[in-house]
Image (tube, rainbow, N blue to C red):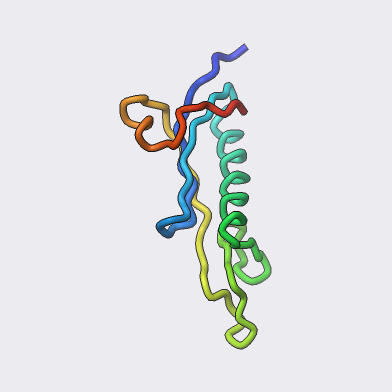
Amino acid sequence: MSKKKKYFYTLSLGMSGCDRTGLIETDKNEDDICDYLRQQAIENAEDYGYEQDVNHFDSYDQVGKDWDDEEEDYLSQGELEYWFENYDPEEHDAQVVCVEFEEI
């Protein structure tokens, strides 16, 4: 059994005010962590009213909000961004609302 590691993560839409940070503890590999964080980034975007539209953007990581029929485009667009790094209490505790680890 692998030892669980602790990580700090950030989710973003590439614009201020839509970021989310958190802490996870897991024994999963980097690919599995990225898959989990990608799903969390999608949910974060949806919380701000953004949606994926692969047919329009031709990308799974771009999102849009407020479709304009006249322009045939979204009035606001963003790109899913998600990354993680090893947890360092001195560096990361001030960046999260609550120092509580989510297990995945």
